[in-house]
Each structure stands twice: as C-alpha cells, then as structure tokens.
Image 1 (cartoon, one colour):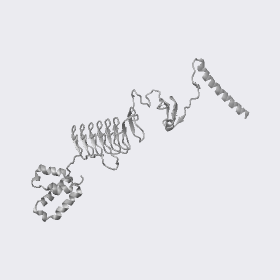
Image 2: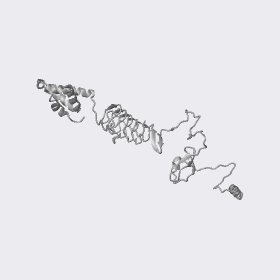
Image 3: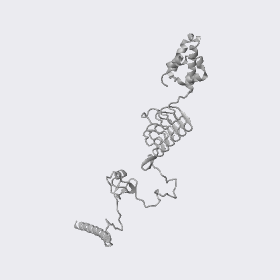
Image 4: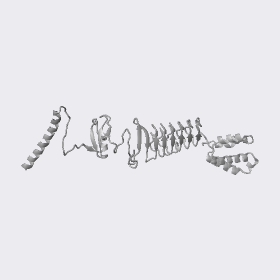
Length: 323
C-alpha cells in the first residue's frame, strides 16, 4: 500500500515538474505566456459538446475554442461575448472547405454547396433573407426579401427583389420580377383567394391581395388589380387600372341564350302559351347568379335593345344578385 502511494506521489511530482519547466522555459526567453504546454506523447483535449450546447453558452469569450462533437469540428468564437459567431477552425487548405477566394479542383459528384438532410437551404445578404430552396413545401425564392413571409404556403416561385414579399398562406403562385405580387396575401389558408396567380414583369400584379387565377405579363400589368379574378393582361401596363374584369365563359353564353329566350317569349304572344317554360328558365338563371352587365352591353352592341326594350327591367333586374 505504501509503495503504491509513493509511486503516485512520484508521478504527481514529475508532472508538476514538467509543468514548471514548461512555464519557466519561455520565461527565460523574455516573454510571459498564459500557458505553454510541452509534451512529446500527449496532446491538449479541448472541451467537447454538441452544437446546441455550444450555441447556448452565455457570453462566451472571444477566441473561446470548443470541439463540436456533432459536426466533428473545432469551433472558435470569432464574434463577441454579446454577439458570438462560432466558426470552424481551418488550416486554410481548400480540402473540405469553401474558401472566400474560390476553390479549384472540386468534384461536383460529392462536393457542393447545400445540405445533406431535408432542411431548407437559405441565402442571406446583410443578414436579410435573399433566397430559399425548401424541399418540404416546394417553395423557391431568389432575391432580397423575396418570399420571406411564407408560412404555410406551398408550390410558390418568387424570383426578384421583394417578389411575393407579403405572401404567407397562398399557394401555386409564380412571381418573377421586382415586387411582382408584392401585396398578395389573405388570412384564410383554406380559401383559393389570392392563389393560382402568375405575374411576370416588374411590379406586375403589385397591388393584388385576394384576386385569384390572374395572369399578368409585362411591366406593371394589372398593377391596380386588388381582388379581381380570372384576368389576363399581356403587355406593358396592360389593364393597369383594372379593379375587376368579368370574362364571358361558355356557361355564361348558354345562360345568355336562355335569357334571350325568356325575352322573346315575353315580347310575343307565346308567353301565354309557355308560362311554365318561362318560369323554369328564370329560376335557372337565378340559381346561376347571372351577372347582368356584360349582357346589357352585348345587347346594345348588337342593336337588340330596339326591339327588346324591357330586357333590363323585366329580366335583368330580378337577376342582379352577386356574380
């Protein structure tokens, strides 16, 4: 027992002597180190911890070094205690690193800028979001502030400064150009309002908020549109001041024909013979909420109002509901 204890004391004394020699050696050379460790068979073991633990250190000293056991990198705080900036310690070699001055001799088969998991890849300029590739939502953005408010939206493409800047939940959108679809947004993720829009051109569909199924191609095309739907504008400032545009669809054409049938019946002696048919056509039009304005314009253009004077009053009036 005494022999074991004596051997332990000898080892402690020898280690202390080596440490004193390591400190005394640089002192004799004329400078004072914080600590100088010299050994021919041992190394310095830096504290080891996971990435989140490192980031959770309160006010880490500038220059503090820790080994990240998750990324297998020696990290150093190159920032300040208040705003730490943990960076890997590199030898400056281009092997397994991306240099600020560029790399050469890379193999694109296994060397790339990106991730090896299913996390989004983001780009920043001056610490401001300038792009994202999101594998989960399918969203793609490139440009300062482009798509930066995306929350639950999916299948969106935003290319250009501030393209789709305020959009949060609307999906299936394409915005290419400075501030394209800038104001596009709605608070209802289960509604199609503000979705399925395509804006190509600087400030195209800039003020659109809840309008859906719009296509705008050209500088400031459909610029003032806010909630109008199913519009198509091609060319510089095309439909610039449009708020709402109504398009004539095949279904509406058929309804228009039915409307004319009712008018013809009313304007002839046939109305007394076809009262049931007339009522059923009117009921059908009411259920479809036929929007009257396009039909009045068409009738006037065709000159039909000369022999159908009561069209607006007798047929259109009861159908003025909501489009």
